[in-house]
Image (cartoon, rainbow, N blue to C red; front, side):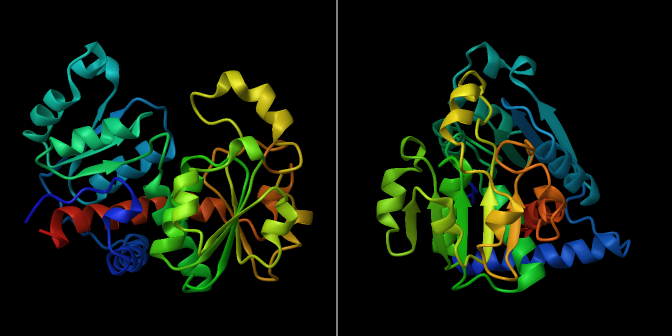
Length: 303
C-alpha cells in the first residue's frame, strides 16, 4: 500500500474523515478517564517548524507522548533545510529515520514536494494555503456539541486565508453549505470557490453571510508573514468584526469558533470570547484529540 499523507482534507474520503472525528471523541474519553493507550510506542515524529506555534506544537508533542512515542522539534536553524539543502534530499534523509513527519511552513508546494519524496506519512500542520488539522478539531467540536454538520450552514467572516480555503474543502467532505463574508480584495482561492459553487457563496456583507448560520467562524485579519500589512488590513476589515450582536443574526443554537490566537477588538469584539456561544477553547483542546486520531489512522489503521 502506498504511503498516505494528509496535506489537505481532500486526501481522505468523507467516510475516513468522519471515522477520524468519531475516533477523536473516543480517544478524548479514554484520556479523560486515565486509560493508558500507547499504539505508537517507539515511534518517532519529526516536527518541522518554519512558522511559530503554540497549539500545533503542544498538541502534536503531547499526542505522541500520550501514545507512547516521541516527537522531535526541528526549526530551520537546526537543520540543513535552513542552509539551502534541497527539500527532496531532506525528505529522503529525514523520512529514512522517523515514522511520520509534521510540517508547519509558508509554502504549500514545499509540503507537497517533501511528501512526494518521503517514505513515511507527511502531515500538513499549516501552510499559507491550507490548515487541515485545525478543521479536524473544528469538525470534532461541532460533532460533540451539535451532532452531524451535514446539511448545516457555516459562515466564515474575514480573510479568505488558509483557514477559509480549508473550510471550502470541509464543506465538500462533510457536506455542509458555506457562506463567506470578506472584503473584495481578500477573497478566498477563486478556483476553489468556482469549483464548489454549488455549496459555497461569497458575500461582502457579514450580516448576509451569518443570517441563519449554524456555525460562525473567523480568524485574525493579518496572519503570520503579513505583519507589515496590519494597519491596512485593520482599515480594510472594519465592519467584519464578529460580536454578540452579529451572532444574534445566526441560528438560535449557533456556535462561534476561532482557531486562535484571537485579537480582541479586531476580528472579534472584546466580549465575544466570553459569550456562551463561543467554543474556541474546547476547539483548541480538540487539536490534541483529533491529531491523535489522525496519527493512529496514518500509522496504525491504514497500514
